[in-house]
Image (cartoon, rainbow, N blue to C red):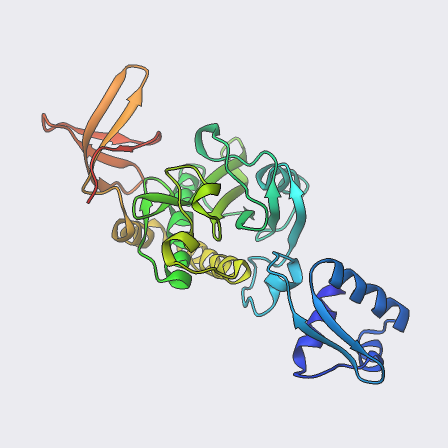
Length: 320
């Protein structure tokens, strides 16, 4: 109902009468007033004038489901949105929903997380109201062997969205961190749920540093605000990510990974750089020269040996 009321208020450039809302939405005047008060508590500035009705003056930059869905334009991505002011982790909540049958494209988002996490079990800084903390449930029609490539598909989708909304030169650090000027602006985490060789669902979580200050972030991180020198609408950034996600997920399912691979290479921060992998058996150092068709990173050592890395963290030894 919130979505329908907001949509009705936004259709008019002026005031919308309580009678019109009541008639169109089959809701009592008392019910309308209750929703208006709820909107105000959430940060909306709404005029209410007797005999004229209601008018939205300003809206909060919160990831409220009805705001995210407004003019979103996707077919599946974001059809269902689960929103909380705070939760422990959007990943945990999305996995729980996936297990009970949540549809593909369901999005879980929060203003802040108490236990947000990134790759390799690292914590993710979740400053309230300043970033985007979300997870998407996917149910891809693909084999278990191919599903790992979704991590790279996600990186291409989010990187493209960041470039579109900000105009900044966002790049991908293998496999799926998004960097600007060598500093992380987006972290992506993928978790799989499968039975035998059948994929049940995949959850892709992402944290985007949108309007944080440098003092609110680790030294190796940055935000869109820091890099562009201006604040961004978190709703606008989130919507562009969801649109891009749907576009690239469809390309992956319909055309395969080859197209995504080329775009990933075009957006790469890692290719052409010397990288180091730290492993229990010792360090592996080489020039990252290509992305294999299965999504692995190909390295060439000083001795000319080609090494294929399926997972791990590529520590950059040089920048370009």
